[in-house]
Length: 363
Image 1 (tube, rainbow, N blue to C red):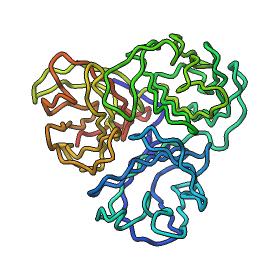
Image 2 (image 1 turned 135 degrees about the vertical axis):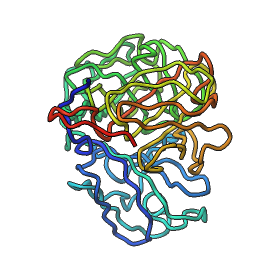
Image 3 (image 1 turned 60 degrees about the horizontal axis):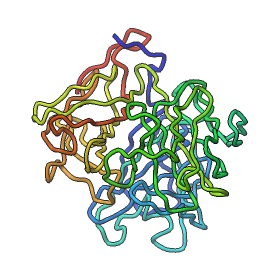
Image 4 (image 1 turned 180 degrees about the vertical axis):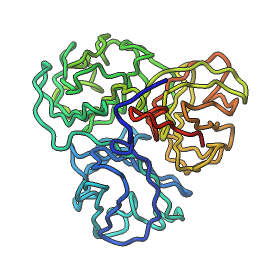
């Protein structure tokens, strides 16, 4: 059985739902930790971008997983503070500041005020890291295996950046904040010669000047001289993830093309699963333990799309969340095409067996 030193995963990650009320300012609580990285999506109709904010760049600087757009800075500040149990959102001069992204009852007339947010606890205020050839600013939580890293590119092939984890990260998500080259994702099961793009549907791509064909180490990750990952003078943000037994798992599975799909063992009951077909053109898929709070887990969001939440429409896919992993419950190509390879990231609601001997229960 899998044991863990993280008996309460919500101390480091949680999924939270809320209903907008157009109030300002508004504090959102119940996260279970002080978040350093917050990812929010409006669930209702209309095309509303995903919003990604972190404490290293600041609460007024937003990125969208579904676009290549550079950082959107709001002069009034969308998040004014990252609190011990959530965030505080400030008001601005009109409906796009900031209610559209966090607390708008009717964003762009899309209707509905339902939101979902996923949050990770980093290391608080960033500190300087000189482990790499480029000095970085790092907020690292070594217990949970998560760090936020910012730095300035130098267009040098083989440049290295310190990530602060003390162990080798298995997933790296990178974005140039002042340019439009888009997102780059490195995953251990793809290797450092390849990458996926968070904002698009493309299959895995091989390109030397992205990660310089060099795997990360316990201290640094490498980048090539491509503008998207190391443009000279450009600003970059990276989210680095290392596996922690009973809390996080980053792996791959092979689809079988059957509604009685593959079972993926994680060693915990997942609270969050994101998956991508690395073999073919397909959207990323995102599931969590709150939408809905029972199996079949079929309320889909797509990190690569601004679309509203879907209930397993157009072959979107579905999973069961179990006490020790998740099981695919769809033959949809984007989640379970026969013979295709899928990479995934998963974070825990509860470990299968905690270090205190308490066992998780299936939904």
